[in-house]
Image (cartoon, rainbow, N blue to C red):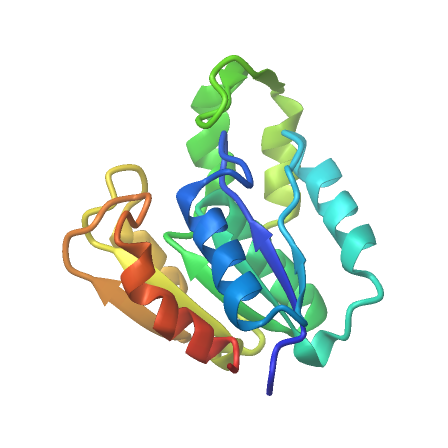
Length: 193
């Protein structure tokens, strides 16, 4: 199955300016200029973020769309992939963001634009719980790239969550998957290119 529409979802405090998002955008522009590419800036409210994304992709063909998500974006990508039964690539995906982000309630800054502030509200934790998916309905649709050296999320928890899917388990590495470019071939192969 060849991809025609690709959605990229960034992580918490991140943006379309992240290194991985930019690398994916360059890959698509260079090798698949006919693809529809969408990498939106997600609002801090999980409910609002998924509402906006769902509206943006509502006319996309599920059989030829795919989603790539990093960290919190990986959690969101799982929700999208379960809703649409489409392919997904997850990059160090958050497994329990409601638990993990509870300590971030309050004023936050963007990684790629520290001058930009946003407020992470207490009710967003419940919005994350509301988006939690159960077992994967079609684990063959997923590729999870997990770095054992992730300094933010526990790789064992990620691996346990996605063990029924295809997993690329990286020795060492970091949360950002700084060597992401090396893994682009595996990502693009999973996307059906």
